[in-house]
Length: 133
Image (cartoon, rainbow, N blue to C red):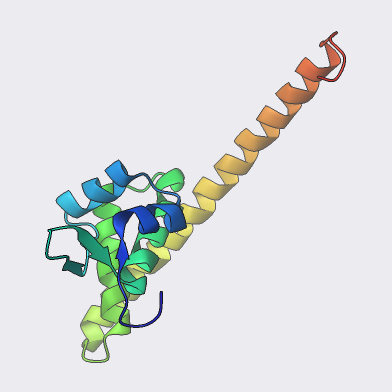
């Protein structure tokens, strides 16, 4: 997509690796709404909308709730808006720091779980008698 172009939900699902159902749900709960609708009522998304969905996709496996995701997206909007006041920016910065800390802790936990899975895979491999497995 180039600036000013819209993508339909199927294209967005392909780009973001999110299901149509998930993208629709995010619209229904006001997390990420499409920027436009076609004459037939189909959801149309911009590159900015897709970036918001990608941000959510990154947050989901780290244990963020929908409310936390919404708050983070709101904070990013505040920081991207030159008209935001100093207090809004300070609050947004504080929340982003909290999110960064949570992300770090969650990523550490996921790395540990991955190491356990790899250990278990190796154990199973040593006990597998069928060739090629």
